[in-house]
Length: 310
Image (cartoon, rainbow, N blue to C red; front, top):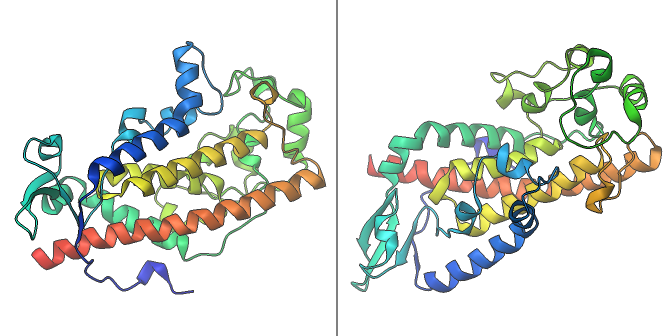
């Protein structure tokens, strides 16, 4: 497999999109299906301990997910009265047949988001080029509540612990903790941080992220959001759908009792639970690396077009 961190960067081929209204309608319908459970909870004024994470930790709104973009390097047929002519980071253009259209204003976008594009390219490329590690068994969630009863801390979700406080602590103490993801590690209790074999930091994130990590794979949704209208709509929703699927496994394998959501526990304290967790983890890693390649392509399309114009 080629090293995606150092993959050659080629100028992307221009694409003209003439069926934008149909694509936008289909995209919005898919977004509505993917957010239906969370929106229903909101409409009833209730929290959703599994799906809220997708809209709080990754601060976004269903409206952002519903908006379709063609992505970097595409020109969209759009009459002058089309609202896209007024969208941020868009500019009006003329298509080869003289028809009015819009396209991403790459220089303007990079002026505002260039550092983010380069960071995403470096992080996603480095992660994709590494082998995955599949022996963590989701213990990061357990480490976030380790010994919280003894210290009077509140655990992170308004759900009971499936094994109780003592049982949860016993699971942590009987396993190796080797979390490589800083944004999980930073929520560990102090006692769990000391037990972690690795010391991830923000500064070492590019050097430590690996594609077996559930949270690194969920974060592809964050990076797609960072790239905004440069990301094609299907890629954004694919990243959101992966993050949502992973989130359900993340909580199923956590110390919390999620049975009230109709979710069966992945009991990682048992051999059978460990095997199921690894099976899902490998499946998520495969899906995530496909998305990583696509995000790398988006970053390269932006950076190459910028260098050509510069």
